[in-house]
Image (tube, rainbow, N blue to C red; front, side, top):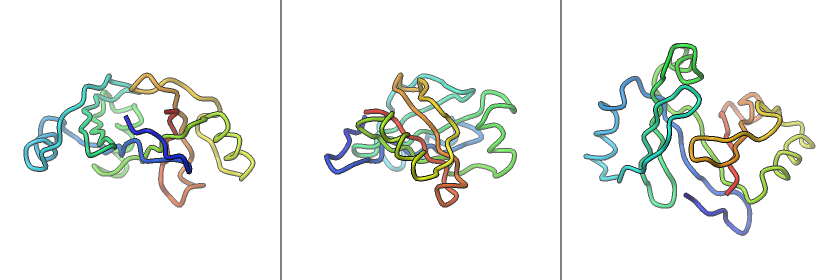
Amino acid sequence: MQEPSRHGASIAHIGIAVRELDHSVSFYRDVLGLAEVPLADSDGAHIVGLAAGPSLIELLESDHADSPIGKFLEKRGPGIHHICFAVPDLDATLERCRAAGIRLIDEAPRIGAEGKRIAFLHPASTAGVLVQLTES
């Protein structure tokens, strides 16, 4: 959804792990007035997208306990799961990450929820934040 800045990455979305989508979406939709954006389920999560200006909020409900969101909820409870940055060239960005010693979760890009190429960076290398990169 978000176009990258000419100067580098921009925020594409923030993923928030929730226990119940129906309960959680009402705050963002009904109280904050964010419009729902259709997104496909991915990686064992049911996803509801909400437009927050040029970026999205993605509410992520676990499909099963062994999914990444299920494990996150079990360990940490509901809350911010990851931040996603849109980059103009995912392959080049991953090369810069490797060169900088950033630990990659995904060594090669894969297809994410919006049908775009994505890759995750390990939070141990990014100040405790799970970072997702997406190609815009």
